[in-house]
Amino acid sequence: MKNFIKPIFTRLRSNRTFRMSIYLNNLKNTVTVKKKADQERLYELEKAFNRVNINRRVLFSFRVFFYILLYASLISTFLPVTPLVEDFIKKYFFAVAGFISTTFSALVVYILTRYIDIYMEDLRIITAHQIAIYEDYDNKDNTKFREFLEKMF
Image (tube, rainbow, N blue to C red; front, side, top):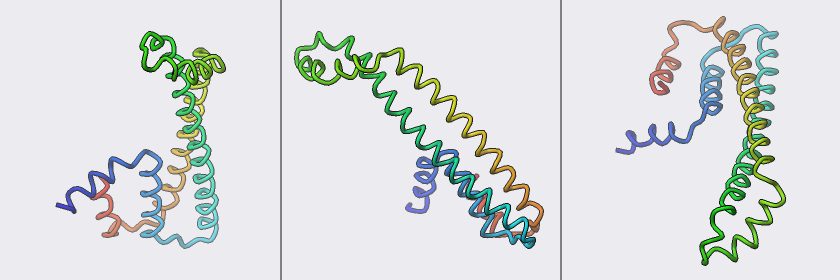
């Protein structure tokens, strides 16, 4: 039963960049790159992948924050009629909604989403470049990599 459940939870917790990094790490472990120039290029691409991925995560965190602010400002409009939460809303949500309005939050969420999309495209380009280098050295009878692909997909 454990062997059946583990892949399901692994897929649930993975996102696009996590799957990219797993794939690239498996290529790195199973394919031997012989040329020094290609090894250096792969190292530089790996550093670029990590840097872009960190930037994407930071932007994603900011976007979550602004989604919460957007939600707070919308909720503060509709919930003051409920007597139990009125004091809480007056204290916190109105302060937040007054500080950062709904329009500003929506605009920031849109801009952050666009930048996250740009970073995702950069990650795809970097990943494709790394895969192209690894493909030059991949032997088609690599059983470890075939087993990994069967598990992943």
